[in-house]
Image 1 (cartoon, rainbow, N blue to C red):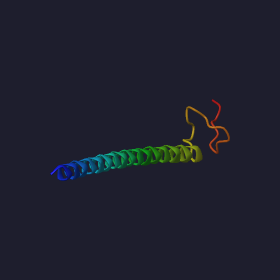
Image 2 (image 1 turned 30 degrees about the vertical axis):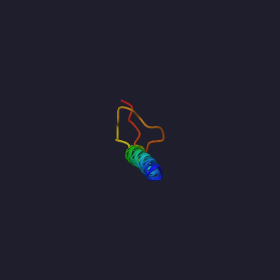
Image 3 (image 1 turned 30 degrees about the horizontal axis):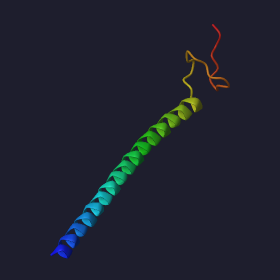
Image 4 (image 1 turned 60 degrees about the vertical axis):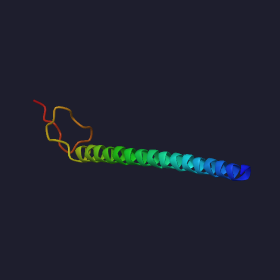
Length: 78
C-alpha cells in the first residue's frame, strides 16, 4: 500500500510540474505574440509617417510658409 501511495504522489508531482511548464510556455507564447503585434503596429506607423514625410519632401506645397531647401517651387519675394 505504501508503494501505491508513493507512486500516486509521484505521478501527482509529475503532472503538476508538467502543468506548470505548460502554463509558463503559454505565458511566454502570449507575451511573444503581444510583443510581435506591438512591433508590427509600431513598424507600420513608422512606415506610414516616413512615407508621408518622403511624399511631403518630394512634393512640397508651393509658396508654403516654411520653405524647403532646394525646392522646385521657389518662394517669390514680395
